[in-house]
Length: 425
Image (tube, rainbow, N blue to C red; front, top):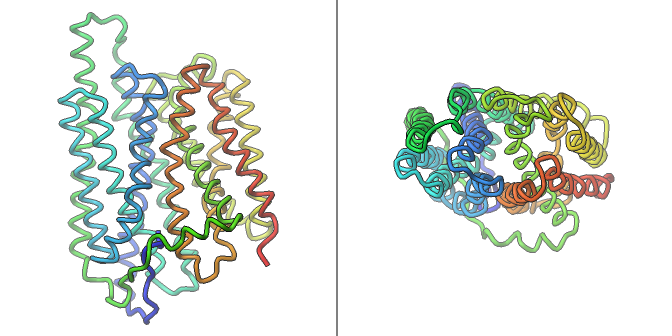
């Protein structure tokens, strides 16, 4: 996010060795915050089972996580402007580690709200790291290749979102398959649930250790960024009048819808694939299949990059959204593997949406593009609002019918694609 700071234009004196080393660290940061974010998709069915939650209540996991983006993005930018990129990354990683460690007292307390609090702290750290990573990778090399570096870095993010659900299903969901909780006595059930909660805290404690190690490495490299790249302060509220421009305002709304729809579907995937009407998988196997959803997004990013060289971005966006609506329709109205693979295939077509919406909304902003990019990032809060609405719909109707909520979101995205099919002149 660059809405609260702008990199100085002085020449930047990076040595080749520094560029390679720092780029590697930034790629690792993209992998880390992608992994942490997608891990929520296997955490949700675990907590739903432990606390006997409704779908709407379980979706509060995503609300507590993505609310942090809305609250912490601008403060994160101000922090970077004050202490610099690497020190801010260090703070973000330590905050993430602290959030992971808070799962331990949350487990001891046995209160769902305590887990939500731990997730919120974790997400604040993720927000800081993400706000650092995007502009920093742009600085590490020539300006003419910045887009290529950013795309490559986001591939590491997609790799993280693909790997984490698979490993998380093994570590977090595996034990749900070993015991039939409905057959246990109240005392045995209480003991079983306590042990299951410990699985979560142990997993996140291990993640905390890994984050602390990475934080120490980043701290060791904190002086490798030249002073000429230090960000400058700017007014974080100055971009609000950009919302008067229809193309930008509609784009910000569509980014809200996109993140919300993507997260809502990812959050319901495990439970959707466990239904007898689809695959009828156990929890662990269903969780492993979530990797196909996020892996499709990784593959689709490369395909989309090639297509965008030959076709108008607005048309690509409209077509991708239309295909997703068709896949949702098939998933909601079919049975067996047809429904299962239809919903998993959505990830492939999701891949082009975030960067395309972002670019289309920013088109024509000129010198105010940096302000606009900062403001539009706040729309990520859609991940905190759309999933609970989808969960509430599932509670009132069914999982299949609840897909109408993300379908509405994708309809708005398709309309935006049609609206922006011609470039700004």
